[in-house]
Length: 258
Image 1 (cartoon, rainbow, N blue to C red):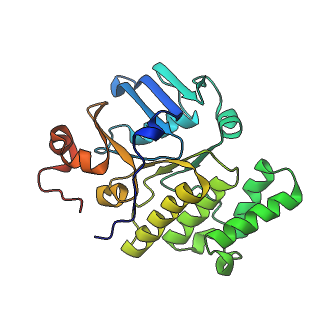
Image 2 (image 1 turned 30 degrees about the horizontal axis):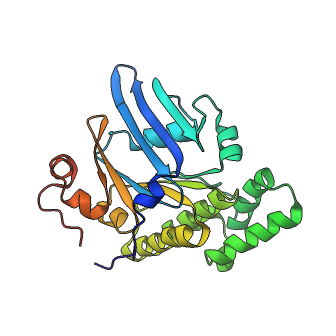
Image 3 (image 1 turned 180 degrees about the vertical axis):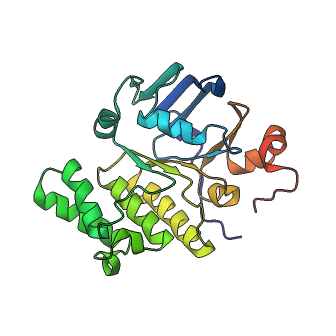
């Protein structure tokens, strides 16, 4: 298997948290989803989240974006407690970009119209708006399909469109929910390279959750494994491969990364 990530950012980045979750607990009714969960998304770092279905990965993204509030604990951006901040303020003040697992675009608008619709909200100056759109169209090689309606695009093209839409506001942190789901091998490799390039070229902090463990571990610096409402392991991909708790709860004994 080709290794996408040629280097992994370790200890020096951990001292510069961009997003901090501290002692987060959350329940849906009587069902506990998260229990005393704490971790950081650090500047310029790619963090992965792994765990079985229903363990709370997408819930964590909803907590970070402000779609839901924790029962207990705090969520901070740049050391500012933003637990009670609304969604729009988190997006504009703290520069959060979010790519959902499904959708995230207007089906009956063309690719270009989708970008313009979001850019009109985030970028006030007309020239800057078109400049940013053209930059992203070029960056993701979307020029040949800019006038095609989003519903007719391939899975990989749709994913590139939604990532481009999330980048219109120049985010400091980008959240990617199940970004490799239902994609072919070549498209996954393309997305992995896009993710690593965003880190190296734009210094964006990125958090990915996905069930495709090998694909995720190929492009992250560090990862956490969730099980039974808690973080049971965290570290580099190599460290997780040697972690007994991670093997027992998620990977299994036969899983091989390389």
